[in-house]
Image 1 (cartoon, rainbow, N blue to C red):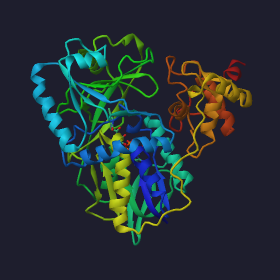
Image 2: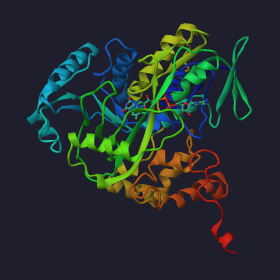
Image 3: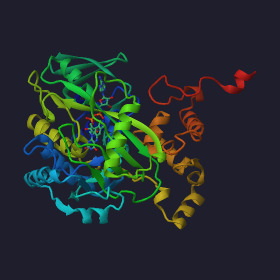
Image 4: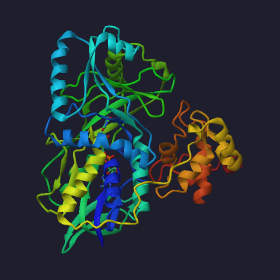
Length: 480
Ligand SMILES: Cc1cc2nc3c(=O)[nH]c(=O)nc-3n(C[C@H](O)[C@H](O)[C@H](O)COP(=O)(O)OP(=O)(O)OC[C@H]3O[C@@H](n4cnc5c(N)ncnc54)[C@H](O)[C@@H]3O)c2cc1C
């Protein structure tokens, strides 16, 4: 019997699991997918928003601002790439000054430092902006983070501290028992637990309905993006936003922690929760909107497009509370943007305010807040890298030529407590396959590494979920 079971191993479930692992509790973290962070957590703008934008006194405003402040320490503990680069919201028309002044007032209410800049000041900071820019709002506390690392490393920390992770475990039903719940999984097994935390992202309303809680609905809202190669450092130095509208924060241009640039996202409600397809018309609109801010975006550097689904709730704010149907069932739902920025504060809120109210939280003295740092050859100087390669030649065997990722870096992820089982899981952890050729050259070598490690045939190595192999048959055999 588990004390607490978290449904959903996105960044929110992952950080809640980590926070719970600091206490003497038996915790399970379950996800339907073959890897953690495989849903909205891996398809967003990766921005740690400053928090000037959410409506004052909302949970979004409170947890965004608190979460933002936690990122320096959290990312140091979890060896996650994070940069506090600041955001610039551009004023392109004189009439927009009124809106931007309202945002300054909102920032004050939310306790977020911001500075109004003139057009000249903006042009000095960002030489590639539209020269017609009239001014801007600088929010220096905004940042960028690697969301894949944040989620995987948080789960790794939680598992190291004793949390049990169950992947490929889709929840299909929840029954009330005398001392909690029995969670039925599609793979035929079940999990008994005293408390449930519902962190199932775009499916959180479906999970709540399993106990008869119909108090909210999730309306998936798609956002489509372009990813640009790392063609030139400093093309933009801040997250560049237009003015926010009732559709959201608008189409932005931002560097990523790995030196790429993202352009997007669009914002359209969609009927299906399963399609992540992008389409020409939407991407054209993204492009037109972004070039109003930065006219010279080099779209010939696009290496891929992608989309993510926002879990937009019917209630217009994060839903983080005990269900009215059963107080032992806690909804952490409707976590749309700024959910990534808020995630560390959401985890603390759930554990301290909601779980702490019901259970005596006794510290787990054996728990660590940090993971063992990874080896990052690309961050080393030449001499240090040479020494590393002479002692561990696998770090000199480059597998992904685009991103310069070595076999050693792939192998180290396999020997961790939240290891990759698929090509995509390796891509998320190491960036092998993330570059200009999108895995065209390195994918076969990644398949061999996975096949060797798990002692399976290369045709059994999946791209992503179970049953998605890239190789169908042995080509030499078939040629006989
Ligand atoms: C286009 C876009 C841009 C965004 N940009 C930003 C940004 O820049 N900054 C920011 O702060 N936020 C941003 N967000 C929001 C942010 O990405 C989310 O708030 C955050 O990722 C939510 O994490 P989560 O763990 O709640 O959900 P998810 O990552 O979706 O995780 C939910 C998990 O539940 C699992 N699950 C679902 N159903 C079941 C089931 N039946 N059984 C078992 N497991 C199940 C899923 O497999 C999934 O892994 C953006 C979102 C989108 C879509």
